[in-house]
Image 1 (cartoon, rainbow, N blue to C red):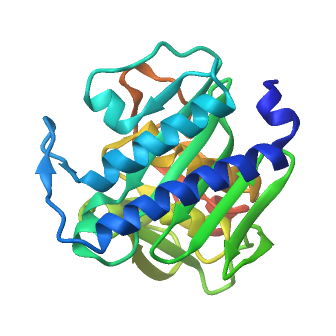
Image 2: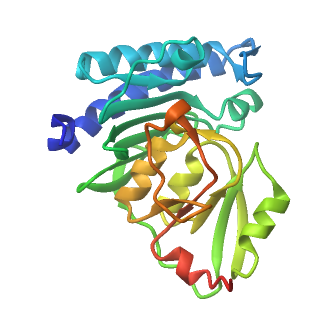
Length: 268
């Protein structure tokens, strides 16, 4: 196991500091009349994405100079280091559409991947001043208003699942098909990787993502979810979602809380 996971509390503290520094830079742009540009894949990018990524890259290279970093804007620019069993996954501004729409539901995502699984991660929503943290063997936490408290996935209540879905990306027909036969109490919308964190904190029970995502979009939230007792499964075959895949694309997946898949009462 990498040295970064031998002292997960210290590593999380360091990553939290880097995420907050990046969040400050994001909020400076957020408060301005910023320009929105299109990348080669037609997705939007702003100065906030770029400034935050530069801060995170510098911080991670100082913390762990020998560990490669896969970061969204670096990949978009064609700078993709080779990865082995340990590497960082970074999305400096997850939820750029939420940022552009100024609804506050965007995050800084930093995760450490070890042997195909996220060993620890931090998800920071700077506009909401809400940070989620999680590491293998150390549990999951939320930090807000200067206080940190543990979080955990909940048991599904008798009235059924609370489903969280994407605010900016959604396929209503695919979601309806996925939920068919399950007892659903409520469906909520949220932006960015906050959806994974809502499952981790017991505020929701399942997040089906039936569309394209990249590994850096979800690795940090996945780390928090795992530390809180949840899991992410590939929809097609139920296997655990893994990282370091060619191209860093994810298949369709579902993020579940504690026992949620069985307690949703699907009749197949």
